[in-house]
Image (cartoon, rainbow over all chains, first blue to last red):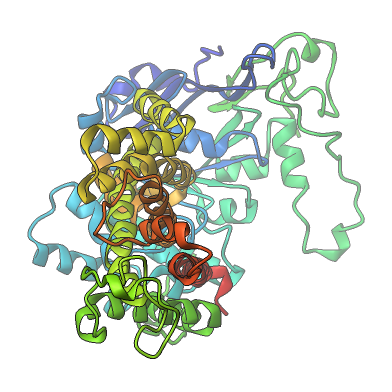
Length: 339
Length: 297
């Protein structure tokens, strides 16, 4: 796998208390097919060697096309799915080796807000029960204390306490997503994965929920791992951005740098695909991405982006560039873009 | 980003009605005419069975040898059998056994099947393998034969009928519940519960179970007529309820010998079985539709 160094200080990441969560060479492979008459199973490399440090109280956005493995990465980071190899450390504790009991206890601190606010709430539970569950699981206190905390949580996400008695189907999409946020925050976590948490909402509601998330981050000192494909949201909301392509990070940098001066051709092409509101610029030629995303079951040799890269040269077809550090930023490309 | 000052201001305006899942379901059920007819029939039958001694002026066990195989009349609405007993009264008393036999074993097999099905589906692995192979065995074995073996070895009484029918019935319930659990397990709200640190036992009980309940209700209403049929078959074959006790299957079995002198003796309890089975099937269909959220307007 890559084994490449992301940043100069990563060697001491485990001791660095500014790092909340870090992964080293994380992989998740799925076997598909196989069976008595189906031939040997094939391997899907959903995540293929991701090394990443998430700093305390930052918003790290993970962007990429559908199917690039960003949702899987979020799930594996919380061990909702088991990684195939690699390590995940939460404030120095290696999560990959943790037994079921200690892992359940740690889940207090590691939370997730899902994409679909309808699928993520049990249709047969009242809002009050949904919010009480994480509290009960971690022995929060007496029933009265739990009830008070549920009310507090509802108010925190801007909903009236009357909703405690309602069922999810009686709430609107935005309200349900607020419930999802309140549930994630019940036990005062410090690391929250937001998996496309606003993509399913109307644009006006999106803004409200993003405001809420940003408010809560300040109040509760949260660290967000924000999975999205919406670059406009990233630009407004994120401190740092990771760009993912076919199970790997191809570029990591601060939001300003990355948007101002993308180093990886994929990042550049991804950003050029965003529709421009300025009608005068609309006619301008933009480099387009060619073809389809290769199958993660059958990865191309060399740089995995070369089949779609307009700048690909011979070496790209042969040698995998790996994630390299370049002026404080990380990029996986033989020929990083310059202005 | 601008932050909203007042959290109350960002409430989406929407009137919230009280929790009404049950009410919606009942309304949808009431709109289904066949299901309501079925329900009315079952209610009448239960009342008839419970209050049989007060309804019928006849004794279901007293032999009147000079009144054998009488035709239908004002005194004996469905005639009399070969011992001079009133057929209608026998059917009413038989309903007691047939209904109990319909309900109790169904409940038992539902209980066993649900517990094993959820465990099997949610835990997967070895648990799943063992439970499902056991279920395969039960399903592969001819059920009637199995039930007969149980009745024959343990003796023909009501308790053993329950046992035999529960033994035959749990496997198909477990299959259905398991497949539902497999689908539910992948839902995001289950993943959310896992992310919360909720234990597997709590997930199975408070997340999976409530979501299979609608299926269980339907399975229940469908397994009642099945159990009545089973009991009828067993009694017909002579290993079920023993005379002079009356059950519908037994009434048909004994009555068939006098088919040509007094056809009502065999046909009347047969019609009772038919109507009851149909009534429960209508109720089951109605419940299935009423519990499906997509069928509500």
